[in-house]
Image (cartoon, rainbow, N blue to C red; front, side, top):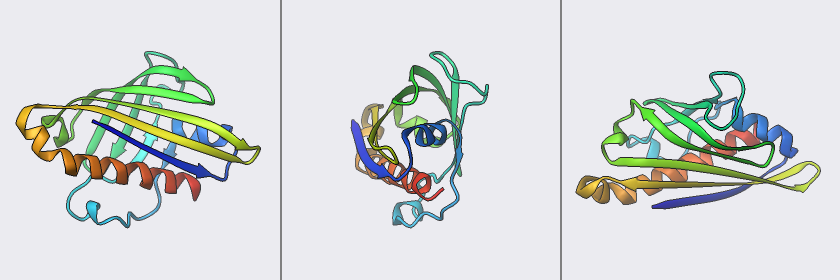
Length: 151
């Protein structure tokens, strides 16, 4: 499964890159998917303070933490990472999760961000949950981008 979302943020590309590496979400989610149990992102961070291929990255949500390994680090234009471990329940349905962020400067003060999430689902349980998982990921992409745009 693949979920891709693009957003234009009125910030320079270097500022958006910093948010990708370390940011806290302050807005209240408005999408109804959160009311039925989708995890709300709380924070994205580099726990070791610096990024590079092989370095850890974490996404913290209201339901737990996704520990990630950076697989591509090209500041300030591209970051890819894969899920290493999580304590969130979706691991029962998802066997592999990888995200890629592409940042493109549209103007000196405007950045186009594209996030692509690729995931593999586990057997029947995962495939039965596929529409809800897709909708949750799309909502999470939008929620994070809105927070960055308003930070």
